[in-house]
Length: 345
Figure 1: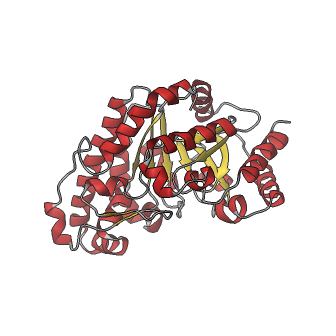
Figure 2: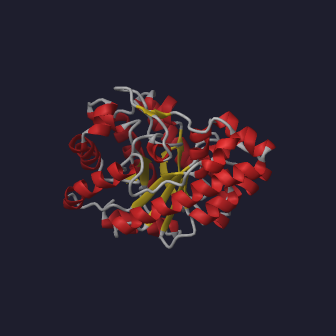
């Protein structure tokens, strides 16, 4: 993000009115490689192609805030790899990590990784170190420390069904796993911040909080998220595009001030659930409209979203979730143009 975009983002979070309404999208490996015209494997293994794909996005869409911006990652393999997960990288499909915990008995011996040396994490940081001069030459800076969340990582290390079963039947063991992951995440986020002094935000992605009830969230989500977000940065961003009615009321208590949700809940309802204390990033349907829809579909959905808003403060217009595969430049331009035409009046 540029300095100007960063200052605008902070103003939005503070409740200042912005006209036209700001536009922002989470972009990473599901969208960028094929949009740029390369295989997903090329994107992960060629730092120059990774950089060129990200630079093309900011050059073609200068009015869009791309979040977190120049995201160095290896999909869902990123953090699990540090715990020893076997990582599988098809040529042009999303990578995935194999679980490393076969039974609850394995949790006590699971080591806490060192983010400086373990798994794919050193490659992530080094890619950013190498690219940093060109990123800054483009007028942008590395702004966010980024990580998958504790429940998300636990579900990859153990398997989602197995982890949720342990959570319900052996809560003390689930707690032990989440404590180890949280300790690792704090070290990992701190290392990113230490490496890049321009970082003034953190971004956590965790959809698994959308699969548990309120009692479970209060026990297995709330305390760990509060611990992770207890960091002195300006922007505290959370992505959860699964169900969020249970967790959303707790976002201000956690410290989250920027939230990307799915599309099965209205921004008006989320404003009420969060007491309008959290800036919302959303939320037209990502796949069925932004990716698969016609230009007319994108225009209609975007107009409908804007016109539905009771309060346009603390809103960044986007899709519900990250940018999905298959979104064309034409559909993205139509979204941006419609926002300007409707909200810039």
